[in-house]
Image (tube, rainbow, N blue to C red):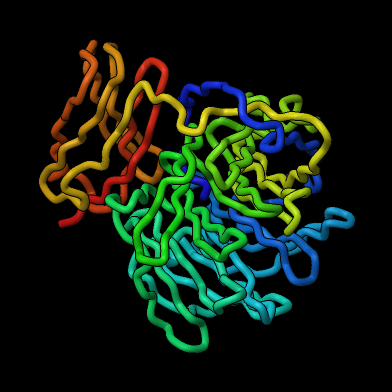
Length: 393
């Protein structure tokens, strides 16, 4: 999803992994200024589809666009949506859209429609969407409410729980992907962690991508993740080995191979079945980039990067009168806790001064805050992490 721009980047540590886990991709721009800055899906007609999420500070997003991959032509496929986020196709060509502020899942019939129909009301903001063609199950995530739920279109209109809560490792879930065994994986927008959802309803940590993940894709036995805040694209093996396959880490829109290419907040991502070709939406320029696998090696990131800090979910959350923010520092140093609303406005900025290594807590008085969703952000000298907070009355 395309949310508030987060400025600080996590520390990357480089190490060596087996050669088979490495790859490098050539990046080329397919459609500049295409009006797409969020989730992507490959359609049954071979075209690429993408959502315009808006940015909370300008014109709100409302459109799904179609990109002809043969010539880069962009057309409107559906509109009248309220911040469209995750998108996915069903086997009959129906497009399913998670509308973030529409608080539900909408359908667009094959061929497109100006007025999508509401399939189900989620009662909260929704973010990711993935249709499991093998089982006929539609998976949906909620960024703010921290859940994954499922629905069987045509059978029921009830969203049934799959995994819920921070305890399950969910922290702004948005990206969804299925591996070759049909196992569901979810990527967190806030902390960049990828979890596998087990059959018994538990989750298992698979990988930890620095700086957060926009969306998740799967192809050729490999997961792919967009590093929106680090301006990079990553490959993740089933064993959790993380590799930078494209992007220098500097913000830009330069085509090139591997680290010679630059991205401007890469967000939506989709992969072909072989994993040899990827498509990525640049969140800031709203352009579509194509990544094609080439011979060579990427830059490898340690499976679980060493963190110089860690931010825990506020408690209680949702909060009414107050909440407590707990965080850890691996070494002594200054830290700041910042609160943003969903318009990107700073609500509070708490500077701690120099703290010792270890666990620390800060109490936040929320009685005067407008009910709604907020982002709590920890910043240290070499680390930053964000987690959501909901205020209710």
